[in-house]
Image 1 (cartoon, helix red, strand yellow):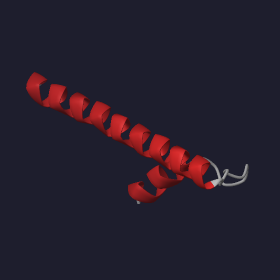
Image 2 (image 1 turned 135 degrees about the vertical axis):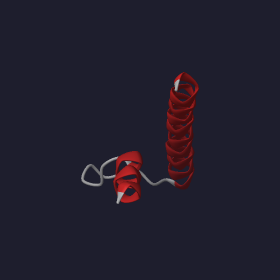
Image 3 (image 1 turned 120 degrees about the vertical axis):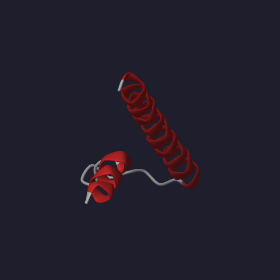
Length: 54
């Protein structure tokens, strides 16, 4: 059971890392093309997370 929990924890950490990398890449792209998020849109990560949980 401890090995399973260790794998789950590792995968959760990896998922967070990948989500963070995605947000950073989106931010870099938006900066390079001159797009800036509006205050009403929220963060890309939060909108992506909400859509994936459904």
